[in-house]
Length: 245
Figure 1: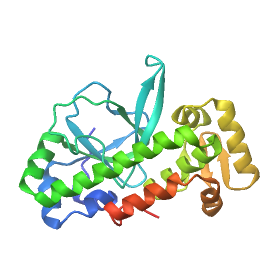
Figure 2 (figure 1 turned 45 degrees about the vertical axis):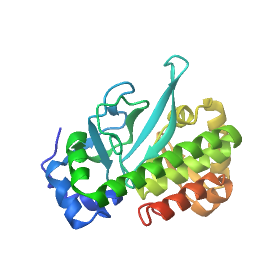
Figure 3 (figure 1 turned 180 degrees about the horizontal axis):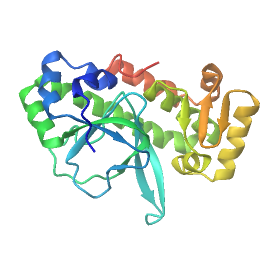
């Protein structure tokens, strides 16, 4: 359900929107509606037209997932938090989604109809360029994820995922089960259990039922693969200042 909270109060909670010019924010603001969404809420399913675009705010985060084994499993290929958007950023609408986008961490999302976003982009060349640059960053994340999954260990990938979640939400405590993390990484739960235990033993993280907390970010970075830094550096070059360090 849409909220009565004024949308202007939420624009600064999404770095992609906050960095727009006042004129471009004014173009989008009348078309934005704020929603509080629960984890697991599907923003758009694979195969359906992407007729809405969503901007996660604050600690909210979404994920793109691709089905494997005839739909039996969903593997995460990219995550989007307050640094970005989910939906029709580049396309002209009426194109089917290849991946399912769903809420990973509950929170506030701003929604705009993709048709309204497209109209605003036609009116503003800087707005078109800004979203095209973001799309480049999102594609880079997908490329890096593919390379990471093929070459790096489960421990490295787990550390990378936790660091990415922290950067995209500006937080260090996540409501996340070990089963969910295993599914997102596309590995068995026993492998994730062992990895998390090793991180707990080194006091890098703490866990309680349904939650994971980062205790030592510097140590987690040392355990992570170089993919974490590669994505951060690309974001900083293409869209300086929206990816939190």
